[in-house]
Image 1 (cartoon, rainbow, N blue to C red):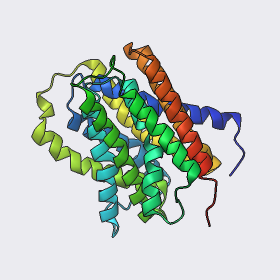
Image 2: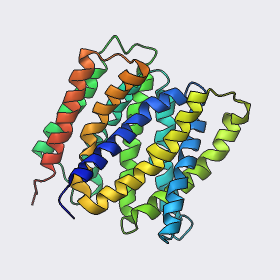
Image 3: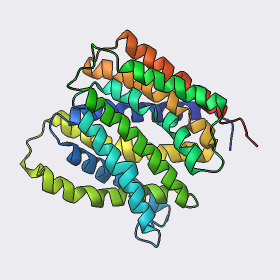
Image 4: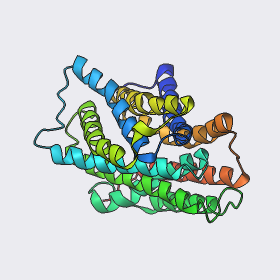
Length: 295
């Protein structure tokens, strides 16, 4: 691994911008498309850059190998379910709230990793970070300007989606010996297989008359926020390592709030800011706690 250079910090910021831009683009996509179709087209378009890179780099895609069950399971849990839940829930809440709720993923990961891994046990510092971060999330739900009895469940659905991301990440450890490009391409293929019939059966997308902005956002979600973003993540991981790449977690909710304001004129209340700060500090404390070894 090399020491980060200005280009590496630029690419890390670019990755955070792309991933955080997914939230307001999902919101725009819901103006014309149903949640299943959004999830399907997102993974379908996301497959394209991954398949191209695997072809030119002669990387074998093992989606239908002896490990097909793990690829299918991860594709369903890590892509199908959360992509659907986010698209379903974000219809009734601001996209910036979704960005903050999804930022809780590292906090949920600490809890699940404690029970399902051998070397990621929780300690006092991690506990403080998790508690602070989740207090920020709970505080966010007390914002009466943004939440009411009609959309509180939508927000909880988005929060549930973040948990599925974590479960999918734990399952990925089962095939951690394989290349990132192969794993991502394989799980995208399986996610596409799962979602195609569901979209055709439940939403009949051929009957839609979509708005242009919704279609552009949906294509962007697939190619850039899914496919290109994952390739960019691979590049950063390869050159700078996981610790450097993990810093993207601090930037995503910040950019998500800013982009929601700029593109959708979403309200930023004092409670949103306080919650955002609490979540970011919580993530920071958790990462500090991860450096402490327990014997």
